[in-house]
Image (cartoon, rainbow over all chains, first blue to last red; front, side, top):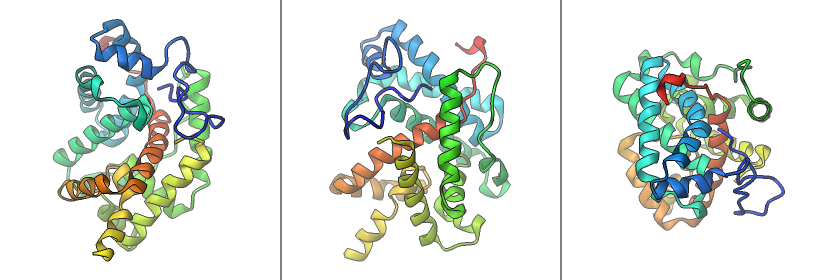
Length: 200
Length: 65
């Protein structure tokens, strides 16, 4: 997803560059979707579906389930676009929040934590796809670099949770550290990521 | 109770990562209603989450559109 719309290091806190991602920013498109604009939804789909699918794939592993979750999330975006409040964050953050929650809910209801392969969650950010646009691979590189700037414990806590769907207690068990330590590393890791990525 | 408030605040990262068990999520969301610092943290950290998602983006099959 082109997440650069509305988030740029030069912007002041809370400001949004809605138009920066091209002719129509994602925030503007979502507002149109809230009014039932199908063309705007097609644009939201094109921009957002890859990140939604990618999150679902990381967490669920299974391609069919991942596709189902992706479709459910985009349907939820279509139905609840009016609930998006630009004052609270970017459209990308809102959509990926929906995606992540749904994927995590699904994996927890379908697979016991003990059966899931933790290694997949901490796998490296892929150097992907011939079809990868320049902006997408720049985003990957930024995330790769910023994740590398975390301590091992911060990075593992964040990636096991985000890409693996584990709870903080499960992460503590997987890593063999105290629950309080995991909570702190998750928070510190996200704050450092936020600062390194220049967002929020 | 200060101890509980402190420990709830410590959950903000876990909350953004959806790493709180469902049974505890409602409690943290109630806390969010009263904690502006936590709301600010959530807002900023969610933007980082958006990029974590973008980093693993996969183009869907055209048939799904």
